[in-house]
Length: 403
Image (cartoon, rainbow, N blue to C red; front, side, top):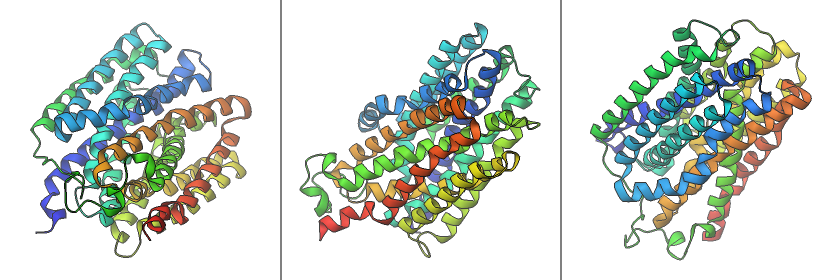
């Protein structure tokens, strides 16, 4: 039995957790236009919901790694669901008092839960098998994650019985109560799940297999491929959040009917990319080549979404999303290779880089106020260009240093 089959059940449980991450983040794509309309806040201000959610990664990324070192991956996953439940409990008084500030506080707590869950599940699935096939496992997780993004706004619209343009703040109580109960249940299930504790090769400082490249290092700041990878991940999370989180708002801005239904465009495109990753990596396609191909797709999408007629342009956001599909699966293993005893510290740095989802979409929101939603997608172009650089040569700094 190979290692992939041996860990089939853990992979199923981790897939459930990736779905939960996507669902929690997908709720923001419903809240942004609702708060924009009902509370009279600007587009830039409404995108602070995403900033509050993702800013926690820079603050709690390292504490999350310390928690994992202290209590292990599985208990940290269970703790994260408790934090999610607390966050959605805070959404209830936010809705009751129709307070934008309280919504930001609740989103911040949701981000803390997200940080602890991401800090545990991403390195866990990365080192759950051979590093060269990590992108394949991450692609499977990506399908679970991205299908959950559109499920969230569709779930809210179904339970409420209204589209975003007609939803009132008071309509949010019932779905939030349901979500709280589900996250409490998930916390219990994850605590009971058969998830073995895993370690990367050479992670123990006294491990004789410790990487020669890592053994002479004294800190994570001496791994240039990791630092460039963290920057690439920071930019990638920001542009992916734009591709996934702006669709409902963009459809509303374009006055398209049933705006919530457009939430499916990008996740479906990303699932197509993930399926390609599962089929082709690593047998036919290396992780670096997958990153380069996806960067070119993202560059094409970010240009076409701006220059095509407005009503048509929303469909090219899907091309941006397709470009994002294999970036996360490729960036993690490329950046974490040969970290040895610095694996947990390196993964915490990558988790902190997820804070890009706080900054870049917020910039997009204020650009939307200034130049309109369509022209604001120009922000994606330089991001994809940098990620292309990392896929072409940035990650090779490690291999050059080993020669």
